[in-house]
Length: 101
Ligand SMILES: Cc1cc2nc3c(=O)[nH]c(=O)nc-3n(C[C@H](O)[C@H](O)[C@H](O)COP(=O)(O)OP(=O)(O)OC[C@H]3O[C@@H](n4cnc5c(N)ncnc54)[C@H](O)[C@@H]3O)c2cc1C
Image 1: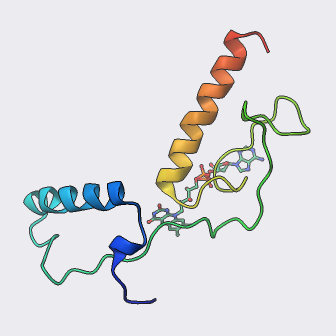
Image 2 (image 1 turned 45 degrees about the vertical axis):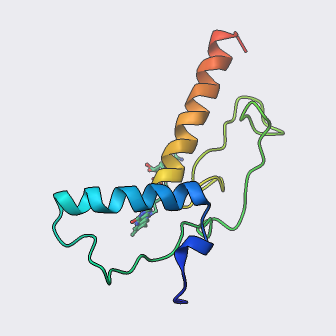
């Protein structure tokens, strides 16, 4: 753990969103945005040391019909990134079905 200014670790739009969200959360959970609260880290892709490569249509580069997705395939490092990747892959599968591929 390295104490630092988190605003130097994340893009401006993320910092802006966090700055907007914290006071709102504080209205729901009193004390959430205390002046000396500490935010810990950024989500990183540390859980999977490998990545199963896929093409632009989200299918595996060498196994047709296989859609590597989520953490185990190396495309997520937490709940949000796994969920977003799952949505994108599900849309790609739906598109392939609609296009008869
Ligand atoms: C203790 C712990 C705490 C965590 N805390 C956080 C947190 O606070 N915030 C955060 O962002 N992330 C957290 N994570 C990480 C987060 O849970 C994972 O990154 C996320 O769940 C990965 O989602 P996924 O869908 O890629 O994989 P998974 O959720 O692992 O889903 C994979 C699914 O595939 C199924 N499966 C596996 N093999 C087969 C098979 N052969 N046939 C059929 N089904 C199969 C499994 O049963 C499972 O349901 C935590 C993880 C752990 C272990």
